[in-house]
Length: 258
Image 1: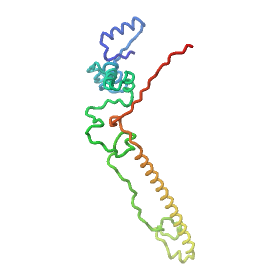
Image 2: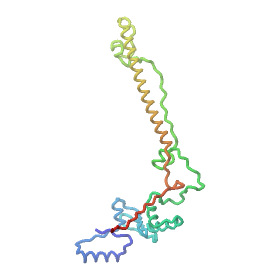
Image 3: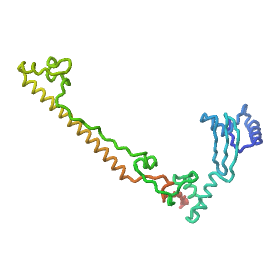
Image 4: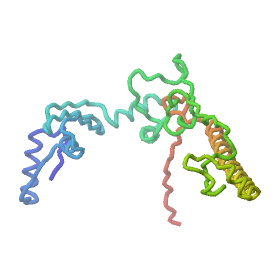
């Protein structure tokens, strides 16, 4: 299996086939176009494959896994981009190695036509969510939404029928109505009141614990939001008025034979 480049002509295919059969005595040979190999790899029957090379760019239209059109853009590709960077940064004394490293760094971007560059008269976009901008580059996450807790309605300390064990199952009827007369006539009024008081204290402690937990959660969320707001937003390179590029140079020392 041999993957052919889009720039290869039919004569190139014939010469390569003849060379492989005569030189290596290969029993079988298959030459597949690189654009078709790409479409097969992604499982896409209809696609436009753009192959950016060293000195040219090949554009291939694939329809139903068949090449329906092909074009080549000469004097472009990676080398043309390097030459363009050297021309733009000539005043900064950029060498070819510097331009190559800059091309491969995250600073170098290919922006869509009409992109507003920093320093122009376009209105500045306000970052409403620095945390989102730092992670995704987005300046906002839609309209701001404030989440509040639902209002709490104060109820009775003792709800009839909530816990039958507080007064005994025989003191509460099927409708959840407390039989006060039975409690009074049973002679255990103090015991019932003590159990009710213990239940109230237990519920009060549980509510206090839940309130403390909610307060701790809210404080942690506020602290996290404050830290995210104080953190500087990381804007995309296309929106930064200035970017820093570090050039790494490898210097080979001469061997010392002394």
